[in-house]
Length: 173
Ligand code: OFO
Image 1: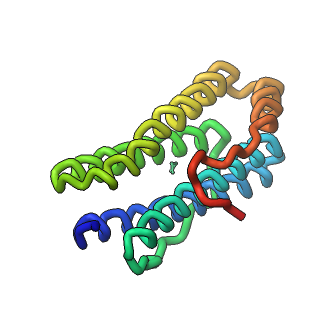
Image 2: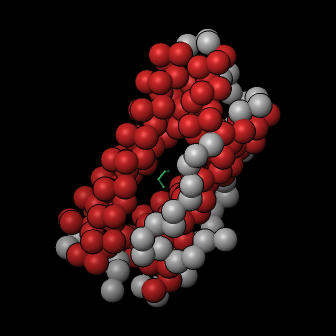
């Protein structure tokens, strides 16, 4: 049993997760265009994670008897000054998502909707890791500055990232 208000908020956020996936898909393309194939891999993994988050919201809502809506989305930027610029925008985006998770959790607590509060707990914890990963890369990119060799070393590190499906999430294509 979920309130209409809570279902609407979760449905809106499900669409935000889908737009996150699209944002990182565009960043993967942009990184590839810059010759940074490792960073392109990193953003593709991020894209797949976001599709996993989208599917977790989708499945939760459908399991609660909600007929979900996919909302119209705005065009996604696909031009960035540098990898540092992309990572800083990634961190800002993830901080916005953290704010969304806090607001959704607050709503679930106010409505005494414990199922939704528990469902959201995974995302609240996940955001700590998301922001931390971004901050690490930003710090390294600031250290190397305009040194191309340094950027390529970070790119090689980003090539190592592998997709691990979120625990408890349905399979993602
Ligand atoms: Fe789904 O956490 Fe990033 O956006």
